[in-house]
Image (cartoon, rainbow, N blue to C red; front, side):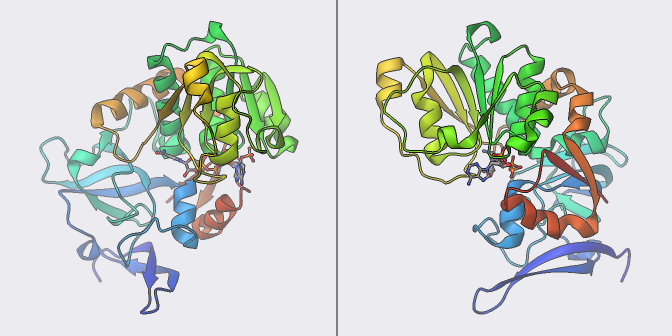
Length: 329
Ligand code: NDP
């Protein structure tokens, strides 16, 4: 086989039972696309964990190479924007879900899905950020578009010790916000304070059934958890505030009422990274290049290898991964 490379492949049998194996593929096995990239770094997001464990129907075409994020070097291009040697990043666009993804030595994708690696950023930094960090940035930008500023009051971040949460804490504190970090792992209090959290609160405070309106505790929020947690965040947001909702680590439901919206004028801002338009991605990655303190990014990142991906995928859906994991290929 010419140029074989290792890949993780998710398959499904006739009874729709899913299995995951490490295999060897060649470029000829990849799906159609106009740019081929040597994958140099990737990461494990919550969604990758769902895909590999099969706990949610993330993969919608079988077999599938999972992995929604990669950074690497273009080896071949028929797309006018890219040439051999260009350093690129890919986040989302259904890669790792319906199009062969990042957990392979090579990836072939549509050139329009790629963005350039920001100047001064390594492939490793880009994957330490990954979809999780880029989503955290989208949340911060959405709050800003809604007029939230550091002087107005605290911002709560839920699931704070996770990937999106850790980057959100680092970004918001770097921008001057008073960050309230909510976590189920209070043993990570020092870690979260190291990222810039001003206060750390226990996840349980936001876990019960929400009152229509609670005591006003913060002016804004970044929520990665959903369900009762998001309902409580909304009910405790002060008049005119805004909450960016991006995750479902605690559930997909939203047991809330309209009270925060119609009595306090709160805005609920939906955040999607997967199909976000290119200009928004470019803006978010530019902001990450300037606003994210690289020493804090290093503090929230651990590095692992290709052979660790499957184990980490199980750990992340069990809430056992702290911050972000970079996979060096
Ligand atoms: P992580 O697993 O790294 O972080 C999730 C965190 O949520 C955990 O670390 C934990 O934080 C908390 N958590 C986990 N389970 C529960 C629970 N049952 N109840 C309350 N809190 C819980 O995942 P990511 O940061 O990668 O992703 C976070 C969420 O955001 C996921 O739901 C993911 O699907 C979503 N996401 C959405 C995107 C979008 O485009 N909208 C893009 C990227 C992610 P702690 O231990 O601190 O409590």
